[in-house]
Image (cartoon, one colour):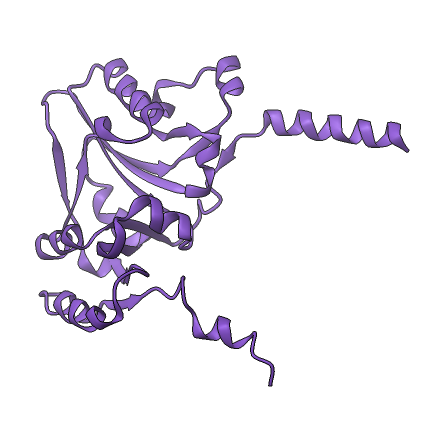
Amino acid sequence: MRMATTKTKKVVRRTTKKTAVRATGTNSSFLRRYTTLPALLHILHNRQITLLSPASWDDRNDAFFLSQYKDQMKAQSVLALCFSMASETYHHWRVFTHGSEGVCVEFEREILLAKLSRIDGLRSGPVKYERIDILETKPPSVDDLPFLKRLPYGDEQEFRLVYLDRLRTVEAKPLSIDLRAISRITLNPWMPKSLVSSVKATIQSIVGCSKIQVIRTTLLENERWKNTAIRR
């Protein structure tokens, strides 16, 4: 029995070593953008999303891959904007938002990308999460560089917009969007309940936003969840 168990473990090890992880939400119909309330108001008022330089990203490995993409493509600028294809998690709120001012904008993927697909120099796609030893054995192609991250980031299930400008040095790339692409706006779990109605009213008062659903997440406190513990 011990020998059989050992062989099984070896097979599993070999399989894991060869397996890359692509975001499991690749076919998701939505894209979530975690951001701040001021940034949300900018999106809604201007009907734009904005791609920025990755140079200041916390993940220096990620920023380096994008800088290499720019250099190897002999371009002047590379800009990006990140979304998640995953349902909300505590991790997403804590890492990608800033306390009580955080929001999550849920986009209908098909509507959003339909308009953006006509923009020259813009690429979009899910991020692939890879092991270092695999890339050492088979280095990534230049085209893959903007859509690769290390395996430990896999839970993010990231989807990315990447813009390349070969001629100009630019710090930002605003892209016009159809507000109908926004299906829902979720307010963060740390926002005081007393502020929710005012924030919701402000968002829905913006031209074109009256029908957008605005809710406060119940991730940290959900009455339906708590009720299941009550013995009746």
